[in-house]
Image (cartoon, rainbow, N blue to C red; front, top):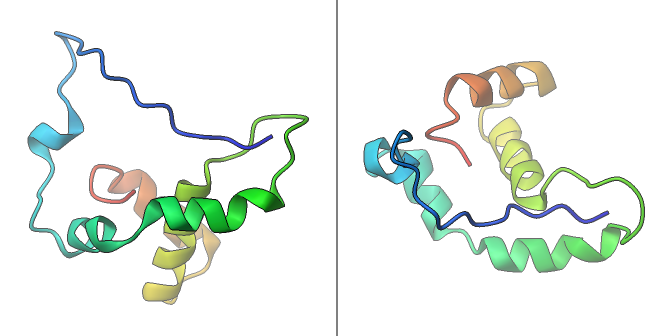
Length: 90
């Protein structure tokens, strides 16, 4: 089933928003702002089923594949990089 990241517009007093402490000058943040994520999602959404288990969001998959190719790494190092820098990536 097509997974989507649902926007959560409700603020929590005990949680800091990612946008409040992310480095907006980081090259990956700039790249992410230049990409048309809506077009990427539209291009791939017909490959997903409307039935079954929820999938990983297309944006996350596309972002990790992009990082994998940019840094010429295999799956495990890319996932490790994402876990360590989740505030910068995706």
